[in-house]
Image (spheres, rainbow, N blue to C red):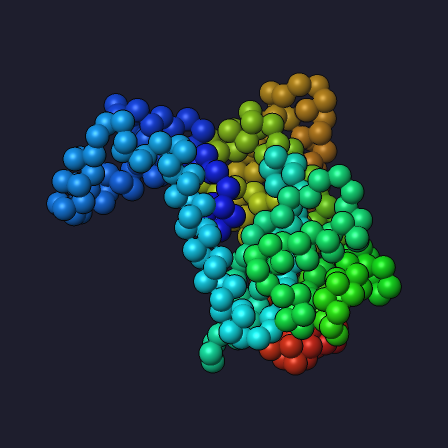
Length: 342
């Protein structure tokens, strides 16, 4: 991902926040360790690398970032060349906030290369300040144009169903169509539509909604403070279980909900023991919260819906995965999503 985004990446260079690139370190980072791996596999490479002067090894942070940028430029140029040969393309855009709280848009292209359907990640676009439809549409158009693509070649655009994106008259899809000066049709992402169906279904069944809300509350209690998370890990290790994390749930990514349901089901005892520990050893407020969660978490209703939701979400997960597949067909998507309603 660092290569595709063409941005300096600390974790590519160092592997983790505690890595050390000195010769004596046992964790010098991904790049330097890969260099050592290449040297161990190729005698010629080892001779050539060791022959370099100590002040010009081309392994510094600046050299690594320049290498990433060069690789990204080569890959992006190949993608744009394929798009130009195809003569048309569709743009797929999604917006998210990363761990640094920075709003970003990921821009992907879908096109036909020969007889093969291709979906290629193009780049990330950082969003600052105003996040109105005009700003977002301008950011998408600017990213495509800066990559050397003609907007008139864009025949379709795919976003989620948020009003700022899907608005018929003033949304991103309408303004981007005007910029393209072509009938660039808007497609509401079918994977998102499946998620919306699931959300509405769960809301209509109060007990299911309550169970999912409870799991989210337990997740927040167990994983947010480091002390509680460490205790949860310790209990799993003490029980000789493979350590599992409780995934964060999301209304727009129900694959996460399936993972969360499975994790709660398989680590039910470990979660309960963690809650019981803090119900007896935590601070006053912490004790009260843990006791309340225990009362709800160990009910027959919660256990029942853990099993039911896992069975149901495994079926809908297959549909959601298909809707996101590279070879997915719009007609088949429509049929599959329509059948979910019945």
